[in-house]
Image (cartoon, rainbow, N blue to C red; front, side, top):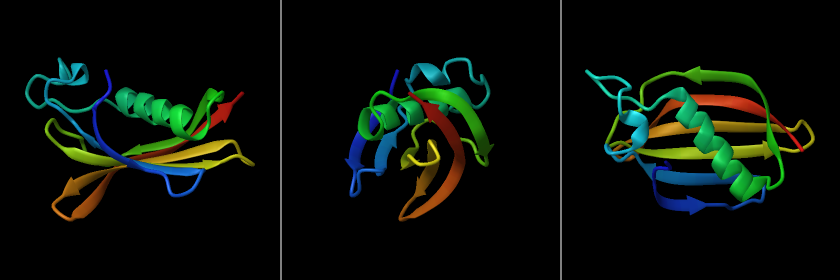
Amino acid sequence: MKPHEIERHQAQPQQAEIVLHLDPSLFWFSGHFAVQPLLPGVAQLDWAMHYATTLLVPGWRFHSIQNVKFQSPLLPGTTITLSLSWQEERQILSFSYQRHDGEARHTASSGKIRLCR
């Protein structure tokens, strides 16, 4: 189940930004965790791959994770921006999720995924 997409921007063919709303009813929050639901890392990776292969690199697929950092939790009801950047010569997709706090944005997670054909 994908989040509610508010808007997307793609100024260059190798970069995209997608603004998303994390609806509390998303499947991913169910049971993760009972006291304070949060968006699992596997969902964040799934969404990065979904938007990358839809917008930037059709025909490419997951190979491996180069690195990933989960710096702060993404909670239900939050608005976030997923930023994607594709480096074809290195076959690396960089991603980051920024949590919106009014006009400010705070990095919640980031990483690099190696892709292959």
